[in-house]
Length: 375
Image (cartoon, rainbow, N blue to C red; front, side, top):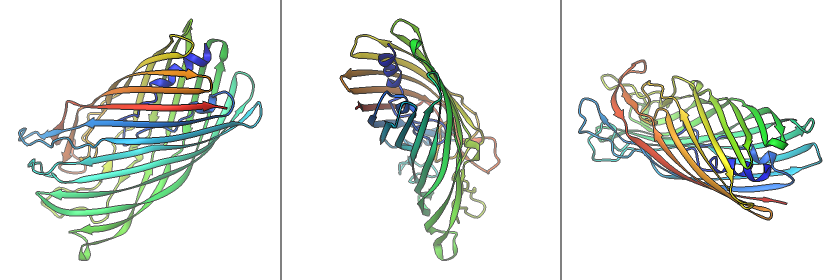
């Protein structure tokens, strides 16, 4: 029971997160560390978000779809050094954002674009204290970089490339297992990282129009509670609660602010509150080879104006997936539909509590595939 049903629980986690809090696209995976024996997996994700809005004062002036489709690839490998100690490594496309406001819409910042990319390379160890209790921890090398191009009234007044920068953080956690009922509860903390991004490009407000400087951004710490338990023959309930400290994250661009009467641009990215994301679902074994799962996800809408480079707020999602097991191979596929929370954007001042644009009725569709081998 344990092997098949735990595979079912993994099915819905396979689909990429698609518009989770901040610009996180996935959390560093840890499930592979609990596989038996030596194990390797390759995962693919693809998301198709649709996010659009309109000016409150002129609802006929719309943005068009401002988000781009994207794909992700992840790798993980784990080896048992002995009966108590396991060592693993994972490469995960943790962070990302792709925003492009179509031209010709009449929206004030039509033609503006922004892209962020971040990944996590983690080396993780796990030590089994006894049959039920284990601890895990390791080091995380986190990278982040990107570029932005800002347009106002059809005029491009700012372009910048932020060179990729890496910082080392850590993760630490504990897990309790009761194999006879497929019970596992795990708690994992991941530390914050700090990045100094060198910027280069053009600004209409910099001396000579040339950008020369850097900006500091902190990527948030997180705390994740994962759980699963058998509740009947071949049936498993699973879920997670994840807190991410997004309120520490702020990205300012050197020489980005235009003089009055135009509104200030900075910060390019900032978040007023942290996020808590909930997921709960049920998995079921249908045969010796196939198991399936369905789950729902929820992230509260904060109701605070966002920046134009991330005009989403909260989510409600439905995930469906299945796992096929054959000898030492396990194939997991999942699909996720996300109802993206409404957001206000285009703030007039950094401290304003209202926005003059409304993004509503948005969604995303994500697909995921994971192939794992035990050996």
